[in-house]
Length: 430
Image (tube, rainbow, N blue to C red):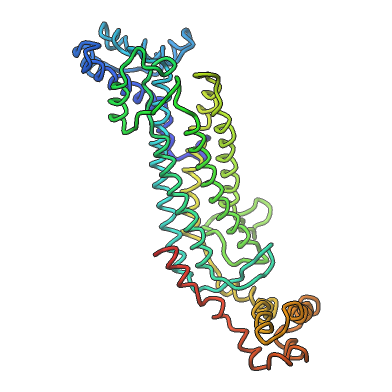
């Protein structure tokens, strides 16, 4: 990813320095296990830890000749370790190093993303409680429906992101496996105890059965989870963008001093952050289908997945990390306008209470079909002629035959729509 959308902490995970460090640890831990089994001298394993180093430029130089990155690394490692290096990589294959390293990096990335989600959840919870009783217009199809509260919007997003946190923790667990099983995964040339030892040292679990690669259904689930989280980011971003539209303006992104919205129109205050987040979500989701297609490999392995993962591993995690942190900032600083919320509720002169009137008529003995007809014909006068809904109901003789004027007035009570907000908050926040 370009620096504009990259946080260094996540980017570091995917830099060559970290990758080769993990490769070295895999090889060195494997040497320890091999020495414990008597396969290689203990002095050789000790020498690997004491003398082992790598030089990234030198590895790149060697790879230009070998056309093989793991061999280039092992050759460079041997230049530092010396004669004992002949015991390194005993019975192993390149995928043992590559796949185990990739999973370590994905676990490291998961830990950062979990921190990001926890930060976003904190922001959403705070704003939910701040705006719990702030009544605003609920919309379906973009059209006024019935009242809700701004706090319920934040609570809904909190619950969604809380589910995402659990999904990510599960994805982290599923991806945290290690394979040190040799060519085609049979352990023919390496004892399974080596895999168990390396896995423990790296904080992983031994893969129950690997062919020559770790099964890619694990990775498919991991990247699919990132895609779901990205879609949830877009869900919040889309709501903010709609709320910031001039005709709505119930909330908007914080506009800092000196910020400019347009090179041509000095008045503009655009939802640029949430528009940006919508775009970044698309990039994260773009990794999902290739990850799914990586599941099917030829026989015990091929490397059609390799080029895909070298791209989507860094790109998807770096992008989602940036997006989650940016979304947290948006939520923390979001400006809300309760007076505009009330003004929007008032625009349709009481139509938001149409369902309650409908139900009251049915309770009074009117058939649902007739009740709907009575309410709708008065509601259309509000839409088409700008009439007041309550007054039109009072003027309708058929309505008054079933509900008197005093009862109609009682139906127009905003508290009716918010009476269970506390119940919902208890369900979400405990």
